[in-house]
Length: 320
Image 1 (spheres, helix red, strand yellow):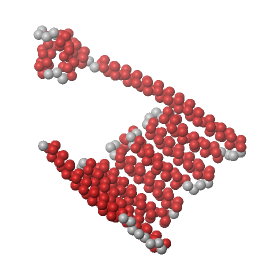
Image 2 (tube, one colour; image 1 turned 135 degrees about the vertical axis):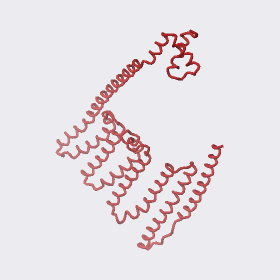
Image 3 (cartoon, helix red, strand yellow; image 1 turned 30 degrees about the vertical axis):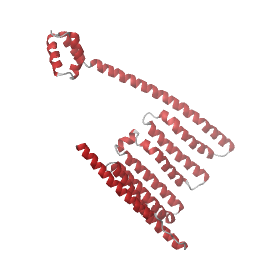
Image 4 (cartoon, one colour; image 1 turned 45 degrees about the horizontal axis):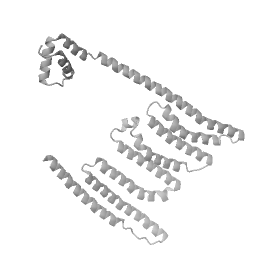
């Protein structure tokens, strides 16, 4: 044999993985043809039984530890839930003793669901803890508003519930779309899903406000102001997310969107102001938003042209 077995054994892992040079491969194969011990060593390396056994034992240990922590988490959640039941039980006893019925009991019960959603739900939920926590917190807040509205005889539930839902959506939507049950459905369109949730809850809030204060007096003014603002937000989002080109082109598109919808807002609000002025007899003075819109359009065009020039220049350098 031309080469020592110790040297061949050092090269065998590389030979097994197919990453050694052709010269080394030839030397190893010539040696294996003459050396049974090195051939047996290679056969042992190719035997995956040990690796499979180690992987199986590792998975068993991980599953066992996961079940252990889930059991401990469930016990902790049960203890915390029991602690939250104490003030609820005390309120029930006091309510019945005072002859007040169950009015304050239901208010306290609904109120205690809020901290329970933040402390008990994450401990008790086995999967999708963040999604379960944020969802249960939102539901508990809405439920508390409903109970308070019922027992105070108010008519403000839909306004407060819709505005609260819109505010919570602004806070939680970026996190919810990253949770597993939602992420599997939206895929790569997380930004689109977030904007859709913002728009839907905002529209629901405006609808509830309009129905409460009077559709005839609210919706024309609300649509003339909120409509262009929502359109501008969507146009900027589409420019940033989907418009091809470099950053300068996208900035220019955002400026253009701002100018267009500002001009539209100026026209709609001016029409409403003119109608109000004709009713009240007040002299109406037009605003200067149209002039600002023209200036903003000019800046946007300049930025877009500059962005195209920079993009073409960068492309030419890459090709060179």
